Length: 177
Image (cartoon, rainbow, N blue to C red; front, side, top):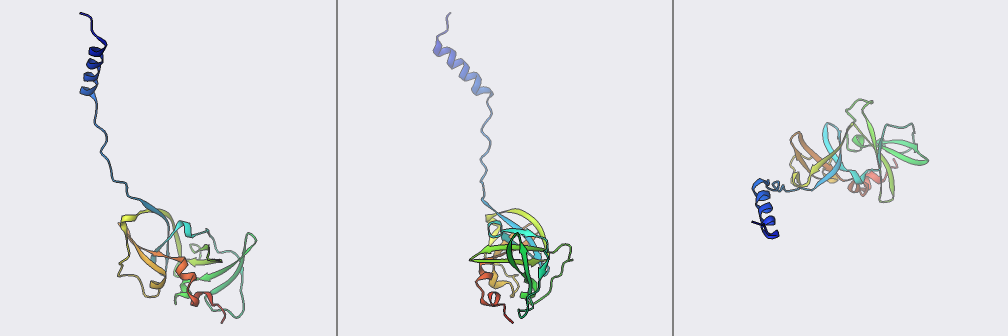
């Protein structure tokens, strides 16, 4: 008996269907955001990666007379003058990390170019958007004007710092003593 092309295709299809595996289970993909994790005053914070220009070791700087005590001075960073601010002193305390671990987070936004000293930078991480909450009860009062909720992770809560809110604060921009 001669097999017709249709019967041949039908036979192949049946053999294929009997050995095929199902499609992998669809997983819900949760968007994430890239953040840089750091600490200041023993508080874990994050800043959105796109809000940072770079992170550098504390460069040599020149003190500036008649400015508030939390302004360290001015540094030359690749030909640009970078005011360096002790963020912890601005918030009313002092850095708690060792000098070796301290870093300067450089921000260039809203027409301002400024470096913020922090105790320690842990690196970049991806936090899932669904771990973000605006309702955090444990944001210290001194950070509250510059924080926007946080991310609840297995290793603790990371408060989201908004540099734009810091740069918009007149107490931060008026540095003359």
